[in-house]
Image 1 (cartoon, rainbow, N blue to C red):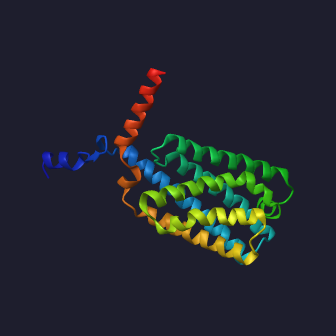
Image 2 (spheres, rainbow, N blue to C red):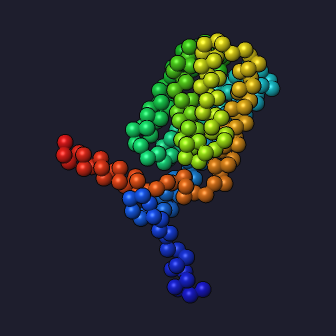
Length: 225
């Protein structure tokens, strides 16, 4: 292999975007991998927790494990929300804000009741008004993935998540329906995370020329204001 061949092999691919050409850097790729890793950890935590609840019920051991798994789920979700590529910055910040509200609410609920966290939420549905914001952020990711990549599992998850949470909040779902929706959520979430692991990286980065254009527009607006 001569020097010219080596140079060509490491030369970045130039993509044609809507507002100009762009390249994908190693940092861009790393960000996507971190985003997907966060989704995988969150999905695993949710799937394990759901399996324990559906199989063992709310035993003392399961209740303690659920608190740990929920903490891991929220931390992993935070990582994904920090590294996800969304063209509209206000929407990106809104999802991060939802996560923050959900996280703060979770801390308050967890420290404000003598019961284990999961039992407190189950026995006091009104807590969903706070911690539900964290799941709203997750639903935002599902919606984004459904819109951008036409994924069947995220098309199903987008209405499923609020249906289960609001159904429990309002007390209109029978237990068997809640168990079924929880199982479906866990399975579809794992399917989504696994499919993301094998998806090509560039589509997750998106059209960087759009990001550059929006950034320039924002800077120009600041100059005139």
